[in-house]
Length: 161
Image (cartoon, rainbow, N blue to C red; front, side, top):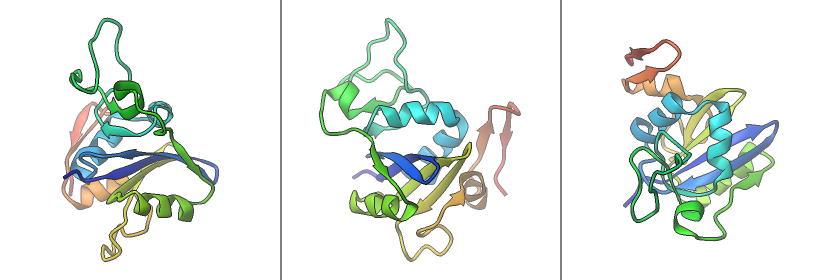
């Protein structure tokens, strides 16, 4: 069973988001988003619709074989692009509350939002007093859980608290 998540990009009050089936927890999707996805790349990710698996790269290089059945290493697996499914386009909500309802309704355990160039995280677990129903800076949440990340700008491993 997957740890589902919802990944979104805020533009003003609007949030465009997609469902992600596998590995939605902080140590995987959270770390990948922080390490590999700036604002521009996050917009490309969301534009491609719902995905099965998040990976470091969105685009398939020319000449690389990539499909749902035979995914290339380190390339995201999307339901539309890679499996030919329809009805898996990004969704738009005009408030955080509506986005949260969508995340909860799709069974997402975690949600991630790129807002003003920074990643934020929360969870639909209401019992989680630190992340439940909130937008917490992703870097802080990872550090709080002692999850190491590689900082591309500093070209160094940043160790959690």
